[in-house]
Image 1 (cartoon, rainbow, N blue to C red):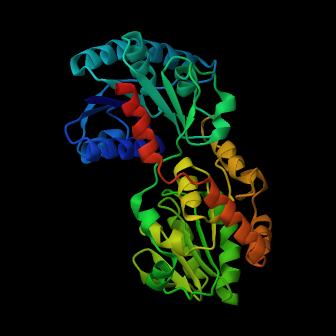
Image 2 (image 1 turned 45 degrees about the vertical axis):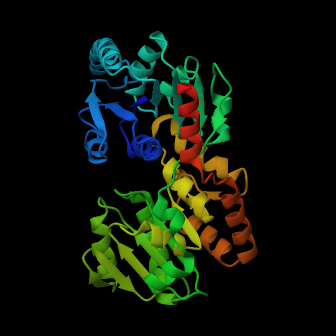
Length: 377
């Protein structure tokens, strides 16, 4: 059997596709799997590193502006699109896949379009509660549509009824035990632990809001707190050091019960140990929060396409599985008040944790693979 995956742009598109492809490869050792992406995004590094054959096409999105520079850019994009369709058709004919799978990103558009034209079974997976432009268009044409969140369905027109599969979660996240993680981190069993982060690069508004909160926690020694400022937030490490935080490792500071890091490289342990998680609302992070049954305060990034993080967050909020503060309303006062309310009300905290856990789909890889394989047969 031959499987052709098309995805690219961000880790949120690429990692679920790799997890699904790896599961298919593990259970079908004789299968042939190829990926199509672009040469200038992270798929060009991640896909070959995972051991899959990788081909590239040149494609990018349109700019939503009528400025002269945007018009010139969009004309070039149309030319790239036409070339990418021809190149996609050539790759598909040469590889001759049994099924073509799209996991989002602009690259999925021309590849899945050509697969449909050639009569090859096809399917797509949508990671967010508000679908991207490419998947909105493809949903009308492909044989199957897979969703991470049920809420995405109402934003789609589709050829066949969508299927809820969830989003693959890293195995180390699923395997980590709370008690084991707390012992590893030196967190007492009966202590409350907050974990906060704004992604690998960090989020300046979250760092700013958290600064006074963490200073307060470090003085009171009542709440344990692990916070990542992100690789773009190094200046915050200097600010914390000026306030008496001591270096305990490379890019790691500590004072009292609080630890501030540049980057969290043991997220499985930190997430397992936490009582409350504060951060953005990317699809992968939310799937991990659900899988581990964690209460969370979500601060959606307003800078992403279609404001999809807000819709991701509301999928949990509407089920009493999280709380939300929009970035425009974010401050040390608003965030601190919400954190204090949750940490002081264990009954509510437990209810939110349970509701988040109830949303988790832990066999997502299996569900996705089952649908892909059903199209082959």
